[in-house]
Image (cartoon, rainbow, N blue to C red):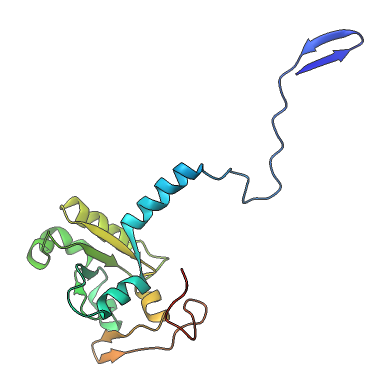
Length: 173
């Protein structure tokens, strides 16, 4: 930028644009191509609770196995029906006995505040398994009103209207 002062022209550095007041835009959004790559990759690594439940309830072989990576005490509190119980710490020594490497695995732990499902997915991937993590974990499985098993039998809670549509199975997403 050229500034003229008292008849003398001088070059000055361009003034950087002011930081937007909106904290959402303080860091600019990614380009559409970068966003598509990122979100496409995210779907390759994650499955949501509703999609897992729909696949399991459709009957027949869903094409994947669900793995609960929590402790035995947590498993006893409740788990996805038909899930395999394999705590993360035991994956290296027991996965080969419990899982077929040709069948994708969907891991979960407690919920969004826990990275146990992520750690389990990493451990399985390092052993050569195809793996996805179930977003929301057991917390959202129960909060969305899906049936779960405990050591006492099957249970189902009413869906939380903050996590699941009240009058339909389809959230529209």
